[in-house]
Length: 56
Image (tube, rainbow, N blue to C red; front, side):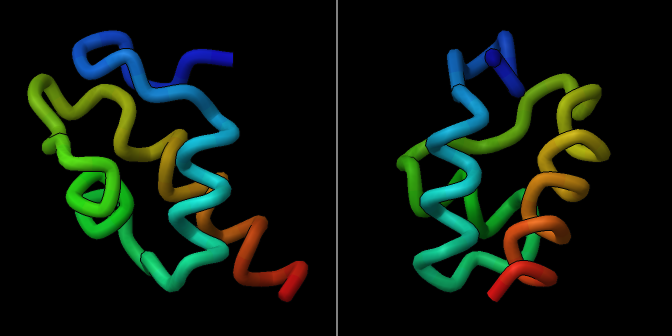
């Protein structure tokens, strides 16, 4: 599933960034070499990161 249309970031990429230590959407995007643009994806990315942190 696509999380961020502006940057073409997929859910699996956000999950991998979270597993690698990113604790915020901005950190995850930076780890992928991108940054949030319009911001509509940030709540969804944050929820994915929270899920990954809870599972760890």
